[in-house]
Image 1 (cartoon, rainbow, N blue to C red):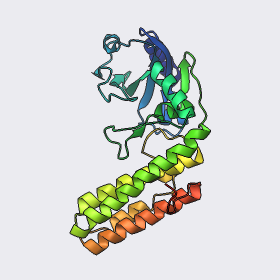
Image 2: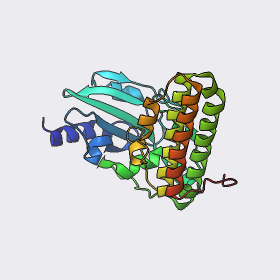
Image 3: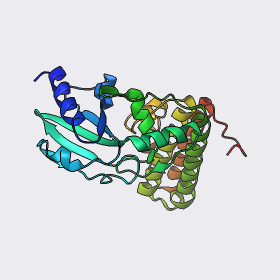
Image 4: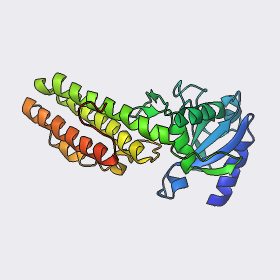
Length: 261
């Protein structure tokens, strides 16, 4: 079937599942940046109890997690499926959680949750970011703007984490030539700083794939590539990476001098 028919087919099947009130297309295909081989990313927005067995019963081959199977937080589960020969991801989104996070973000409140494959973890406002780039296939959903209070608070939280991570790498790994640990923390701190930059700009981000690029921090790649298991080299790596991130965060509008955090 062609792409329009495929979208209607998937949306109809997902939208007909018990408790599901809306279905969206997300990711690169919603943004128009996809490649021919890109996955299809769908989300099912449900209210109340969602039973993944209903999705399994549709009969599409693949793996369907339980609710909470991917994370106990906002990114609470989903499925990796094959539909009409296409790779399909389905994410579960609890509308009660979405409502809670919208209210929290308006007050500048959020959490940073661990999630597999994410260096910096994910902010709980990720569910709002997804709504900003969605393509609604059935049902109705809000399109939240980046709240002013979150634009003030989130950069402070992210930069504080980045600064502490850089400090730890410099004090506890660089002096001993621990290349892997030091480089890992630099990559994590750069990702945290990138979140700070985008939050200060009031820009949503839905994952880490384009995080450094969008924040103007791609130069970290070259700095990391120049690293080696030498204390002096690693200290320079940390210092230059931190300076790069510091300048980007400050340019985005967050004070980063003494006493600013």
